[in-house]
Length: 121
Length: 216
Image 1 (cartoon, rainbow over the protein chains, first blue to last red):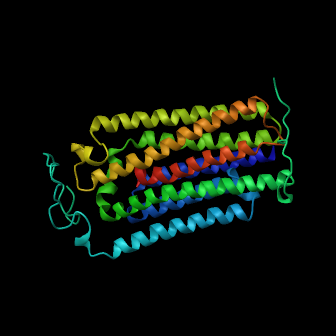
Image 2: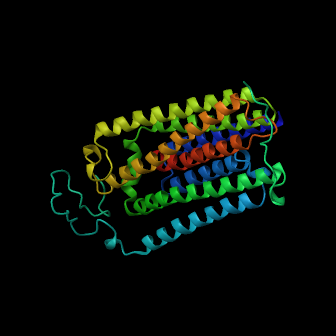
Image 3: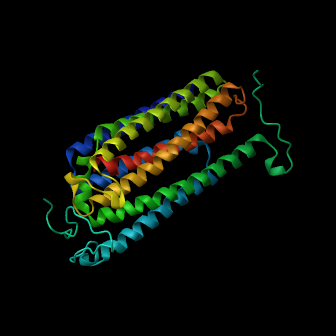
């Protein structure tokens, strides 16, 4: 039964963290909102991996595999973001130029060529 | 007719698979490698999200106002509770309580189906709004450059995740039935552990999707 108590304790922490995520979203943390939310999600993921997915009782291979996957995700997201953030902003879509439509796809509707640095209505 | 719960009748043909512990090690390692490929599948979608959020920060910040945050949050709690039930099921089968394990697995199946129904209710609302992916986007209330990208990512990310939930429900149903049939017990229950790990991964993916799409 010791395992059952542990599962329930970890589960209670997970539910508490989910409630914390939801509560913090009401506070509108601005630039910190995404890092804080992702940090809490990462804590939940680590708890689930170690206690529900048996990583705590399996050192070695499984930890190496999922740890490497995590590092690779970091490299992928990090390099893509670093490259995109280093671009001059007019080169980012839609750019300071009208978005041209593919032939045959003209249609009525709201204009979609407003540059992203204009304040949003 | 109930079969005796016992280790599989595996004839050891190689020394490194000679005992049940080595077979379990191999099975878990294989499952983790599979889960790592799943992580990489979703990481591509998260990368696309990151790139477009960097490009249209204001639009992505406004987007949760057009989402049903209550239903999304409800789904988070549904999935976390179902994960807890699966973890309890593994604990039950390890202690030889196979009927309790099957019942807990069946309960998590019900929660998985509830998740899909709640998601379908959300999708229905988005279709009604015209918040469709790609070129079909026609949501007048949120007609800004980049808004269609947010909803395209929303449909693809939650759609791929929903397919995983559907597969996970199938896995859990199979495990519950096989547990009821007496195939698993205290001595052999590796498939229950591995199937449970898949369900937990589906839960973990949602725990990252939820704050990005509904909260921030």
